[in-house]
Length: 318
Image (cartoon, rainbow, N blue to C red):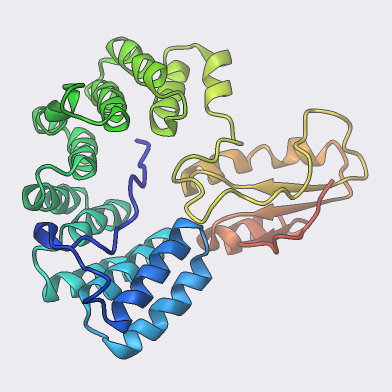
């Protein structure tokens, strides 16, 4: 399942559609708005600085807690994100943005039934919000609730009643629901239609690519699932820096090679078995950037490889 981070939380919208106007905005609210803009610009540390000042002013403010949780979610600290979203909802039980992002945190923590329930709460609070409908549809589909998923998407399928972007997302979501239901061939025209309407739609492209691979269409499938695709949740902190040119199969003897784990822990472990094949090409050195939880495992298994959880953006490799 290709989990997408559909949306950033808009600090100008509270539960029930209540607007925070600039006239009534407090210093804390202004800090939250600055943090929101920084997050939109992928400036995570800058946003965290604004929120640290905001939480010092109002430690129980639900929007501050929610934005802090959003940062934790982007940093993949899902346990902390859950705690902060829960704290926000204790102050404002009808704050739909916190419910929908809590759903994402719970999903990543493996608590999928609870994730569906949280996504359902968000949609029930703001039933006209297409993003909340899409998240519920996705989570419901991948937990076998095909009818609930389809019902959540249905209002967005009328092109006259939905914005073009949301309509394309909805068609793509129907394709994803079909994949979740095991109707792999039926999913193809839906995913292709979504991309025809909105070619830059990364979610539909990712699901399409995996479905192509599943059906044996390897050449287009690998092209669409290119590691250089930066439009998805694989890069929640922004596109990866350009550490050097991609290896295209040329001679790498005497070169310094970077391996960068990309999708999930399971994928990283699966591909670890190809390390001896790479070493047989006699590179000068291999650096392996992986997930923090896998650093000790990989470093122990490959003591002649430099295994790290992160790299400075100015690092360079052959």
